[in-house]
Image (cartoon, rainbow, N blue to C red):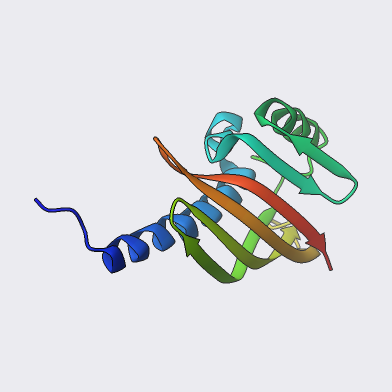
Length: 139
């Protein structure tokens, strides 16, 4: 079988990035910590306003704290929803901008708790596309 042409590869890469953005949201709400962190590059930066984490270990610590507080994760009854995704491919790197909404109390009285935007950077690795940087803007 021959290698895919450049256009076909670009489409496949963009689809992989879009799926990765969706997987991050799903795993933030319902996945294990390891499933969630599998989407990150080893040197990833997670830039949440007021709290920047550099590298997988620091990102894990922040996630553990948010899950311990009940703010996110399985059983939190919260859902991250991402929309208006714009992906720009650049070889083995990509960027994406998107909006997010975070809804709480999904089992009883769904409440829009937070809206904002993601500015993401991705890198192709030997095991596929990974999130290398996420800058989060609230509002």
